[in-house]
Amino acid sequence: MAITTKILSDTKTHAKVLLTFDNDSATTAAAVDGSGLSGHANGAKLHINHINYGITGRLKLEFKGSSTDVEAINLTGAGVYYGAVIKNTATNTTVTGGDIQGTTVSASGYALLTLAKQDMGENS
Image 1 (cartoon, rainbow, N blue to C red):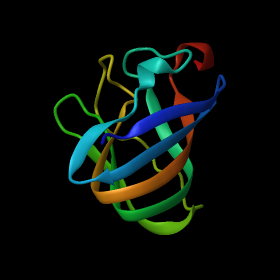
Image 2 (cartoon, helix red, strand yellow; image 1 turned 120 degrees about the vertical axis):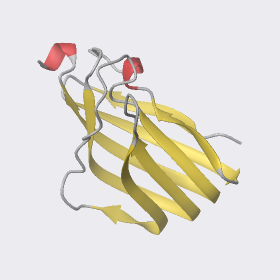
Image 3 (cartoon, rainbow, N blue to C red; image 1 turned 90 degrees about the vertical axis):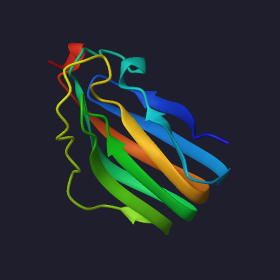
Image 4 (cartoon, rainbow, N blue to C red; image 1 turned 180 degrees about the vertical axis):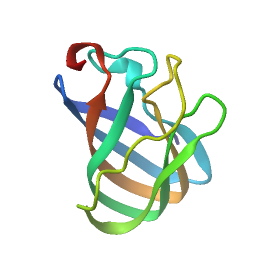
C-alpha cells in the first residue's frame, strides 16, 4: 500500500497533514504535495514544525529537490518531535517545490505533520 495523505487544516501560514500507511515495505511515494495547499507558488517551501507519530517499521521524510532530495528526518516508534524547525533546504523552483516525499520500510502507522509555509502566494 502507499502512503495516504489527508489535509486536516490549511491556513495562510501553516498546514496540518496526516500521513497513514499499512504494511508498506520499501515504498517511496509523495507524502505532501505542496501544490495541493492554498497559496502554492512554484519554488515555495514547507518547513516541518512539529510531528506526532506512531510507527512500526520506519518512515523517512525528504524534501523534494530539482535534482537532489534533502533528507528531513527518520521516524520509528511512537513519540512527538518538538525539536528545532526542520527547514526545507532543497533547491527547487518548479511546481514540486514544497513537496515532501516519504519512504516506508516495513511500516504501519501514522505521522501528523505541522508545516510552516514559506513563499506561498497568500503568505508572501
